[in-house]
Image 1 (cartoon, one colour):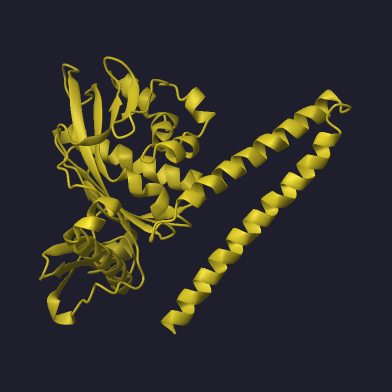
Image 2 (cartoon, helix red, strand yellow):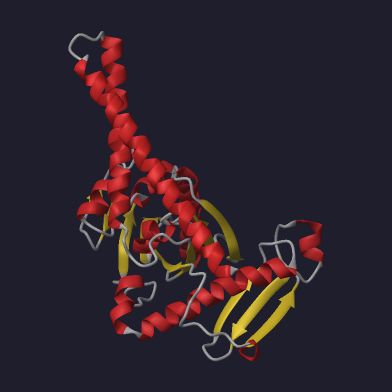
Length: 337
C-alpha cells in the first residue's frame, strides 16, 4: 500500500512537470507567431508582445533552475530549524526575523509552510523554531540556507544604540518517507506529553496535546505542539525525528556530509555563510559565492530574482537577500536606530 502511494505521488509529480513544459512550449509557439507581426504592430501590441516575452523568459529561467536540482532529495519537502546564537536578545530577535523571512518566502513562491515547534525568547524574538515547508523542490531550493547567518545593526535593545553583531543558525533537512538507514525501535523512544503553551485555543492549552520524543541511542529530542491533537503532534514529531536520525547517519558518512549539510558550525564569529549589514553601511553578502548587494531599498533586487541566475552560476546564493529587504526589515531597523 505504501509503495503504491509512493508511485502514485511520483506519477502525479511527473505529470505536473510534463504539463508545465508543454504549457511553456505552447507559449513559445504563440510568441513566435506574434514576433512575425512585430514590425507592423502598434505600440500597444508591441508592449503586449514584450510582456509575453518577459513572462516566458521567467518561466524558462525557473525551468532551467529546476533542471539543476538533480540531487537525490532535491524534490522533497524540507524541515528547516532556526536557532539563535551569540548575541543575546538581539540574536533571538534576529532568529525570529529569519523565521518570518522564510515563511514569507514560502508564501511568495507557492510553498506551504507551518511552524512545527517554537520556543519564545525571554525578552523578544525566539530561541528556536522548526518549520516544515512543502512543495516541489522545497529541499533543493532551501538546502543552501544551512549555516550561520550574521546580522550587524544598531541594537534596538540597547539604550545607547550601540552597534551589535548577532548570529543565528539554520539547519535544513530533507523529509524522506522511506529511510532505509533509519530503524527506530519502540523501546528506544521516550515519549512525554505535556500541556501546550502560547496561542492555540482553549483545547490546546487545557489538554496534554504537546509531545516530546527522545531517541535514547542518539540523544536526539524533538518536540511538537503546533497541532490540536496529541496524535497529530506525535506524527509530526516522528517525521522530524526520522529526518534528524537520517541526518546523523549521513554525517557519519563523510562523503555525504558536505553534500547535505556541510561542516557543522557554531552560531558565532567567523562561521557565517551570509552577512546582513545595516550599520555603518548597508549590504548583504554571501561568503561562499562572494556575491553581495547594497540595494537597501530592495528596488533593483525586487525587479530581478537573484535566485535564478546566481544559483545557476554560483550555487549557494539565493533570493533571501531580496526578501531581507522586501519584508521592510531594513526600514524597521532604521526606525529603531
